[in-house]
Length: 477
Image 1 (spheres, rainbow, N blue to C red):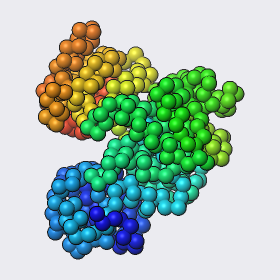
Image 2: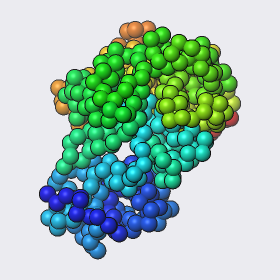
Image 3: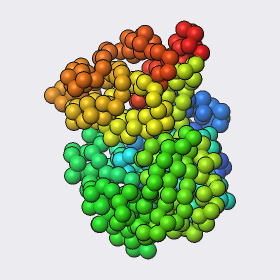
Image 4: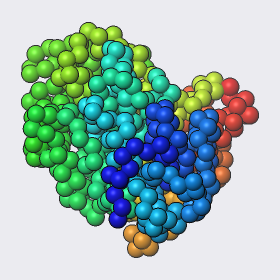
């Protein structure tokens, strides 16, 4: 194979799979640095298509060898691209230098700067966003590449000129020509490990396979580096024990170097104390709901302390964090009815999000619309876990997973079975074969005072917007 090292000074860079969230951000980063950028994708639709259009980056619909004319100096191949893709095959046949997305980020965003990588099954996006915002707020002008839209910047990327680049360290595979987890291509000196659980069943065989990937990541840290690891989880401790770097634990346990104490929901967020090495360090307020977000914040504060940032400056900047899109994001208020959009899909994230919603909207009835659409949740590995995870809702509306055929026939998740199990456990739950039927049912059962929480890592057929339109049409506003 032709290696990417042959493209030393590219001028024209072409991206395959450009409409993916990460790839579109990379396109923006490259253009901002003066490269001529183009791309191809099979599904060119908003919001990424309109984002690229605003940047003036040409996007070809579909994958064809002729999209490589005029010949680019370098091609970046996203992990959505399969080996048999005709445009990818043309890249190989023509000997055009190519890179994976994480390799391109290393070269064109990180460069000689220091990468700060946030890894873990849960909490990566929020933790990365907090880290990027606080670095910016204290004047360190970071670059970043994150898997969600950071509201303070209205973007999921920034080039910056400061000494640090924040990267969300994804354990998903890199490309068809490099099956390593993405985070193994990054070279951080500081890293955060938020959690280790089974996920991505299309790539990982079982939990030990996942554990091995994270173990490889922490072994990758340099001896002079540091890993901040969530100390309340035995499995995270097990993984962190293999780190080549110094390890500092954070959490609620008293043996953690960094400990959060005296948590209190307050004014749309959480107030809490930070203790370091058994001594009071400072009190903070973060405008995010839930114990899990206190942990995310604690990891960031510990990291920034180790980088030499003054705690008072952090205390002043933290309340200005605006959050991340689709993380308990209020999409509409209609009288006393609130529609909330959230990305949660893994059972642990679903349970924590419901707990956070209870804290943010105390005393209100909680209706949950859930779409199990990931490669993992389409399989029955979490069939029983979702029963417990969703038990915190008052009314539960479950859609049939989209593209269920992609899961092995003998290993498919069953929405009807989930609803039956929830009903048997005393919960009020309903199954729907499609979003249209689910939407009608929610609108029929909604009452003043309700909070409707939509949970999906995809678009859910536009359910959030359609709920808002329906509630407005029925004069709940």
